[in-house]
Length: 309
Ligand code: OXD
Image 1 (cartoon, rainbow, N blue to C red):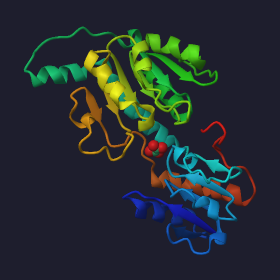
Image 2: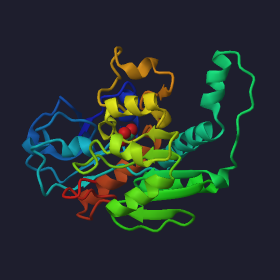
Image 3: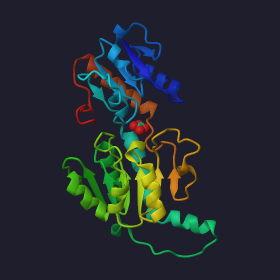
Image 4: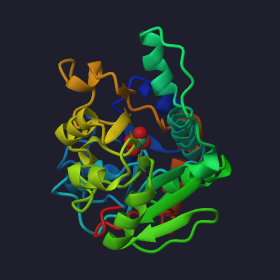
C-alpha cells in the first residue's frame, strides 16, 4: 500500500524529506505520479484537484497539510464516509496567536494612526486606552481561535469569543448563536475572524456585521478570503465605520496585482503567513495519524463533514 502526497508549496522538497524520514517504511507517491489507484490507502494533501480522492478505492483516511479543511469540502466527489483530519500542530497555533496578538497590539497602540501621522510629518499624541479598557472579539473558538483568545486575554485585553454552539474558555467572555453574535459585535473594537469557512460563514464579514461594531473598529481576517465581502470592507473604511483592516487571506491568492486592497492606506496585506504549517513538526503528527489509520484506530482531529469543520 502507498501514501499519496500533494504539497503544492515552494518548500515541497522539505515536506517530502520530512515525511520520508518520519515514515521510513512507507511507500510515498507524489501527485500526479499516482501509480495504480488501488495501491493508495492514505493521503496527506493540500488542495488536491477535486475528484481524485473518489478514484482511490482503498483509501482509508486523509489528512490536510494545513489547518483548513475547506479544500476537501469543496470537492463535490469527496467520499462521504471517508475519515478526514485537520492538521492540529501546537506550533501553528503559537504562530497564529503571535500574528493575532501582534496586530491587535498594533491597533491598540494606534501604530496605524502614527504611521499615517508620520507620512504627513505630524507630531501629535493621540488619546490612548489601557488594554483592560479595550475589547477584542474573536469569531470562532476552534483550536486556533481558543489559543488566540487565551493569548489576547493574557495580554490584558477584555476578550470575547463567539462560536456556533456554546463554549467556555477561561478568561474569555463567550457568546454563541445569532443573538450572541450581535451582543459580541456591539462591544468589539478589534474583530478577529478565525471561523471555518462553511455555507453559514461565507460572507459573514459584511456591511451588516461591520454596522454592528462600534464606530472606528478594526478588522483582522486570518480565516478565509471568502468570509469577507470585499466591497463592504471598502465602503466601511471609506465611511469611517472601520478604521483599518489587516488581511492575511483573500478570495484569490496570490492577491491579484490590480486589486484595490494593495494600495489602500487603511489595509495591511500579508501573503497568507499567519499560521504557516511547519514540515518538521507536521511530519511527526501526520505519521502518527497514518499509523492510527493503519491499525484501525480513529484519527485525531477528525472533521465533521456534515458541519463543515
Ligand atoms: C490554512 C493554513 O489552513 O495555512 O490556511 O494552514
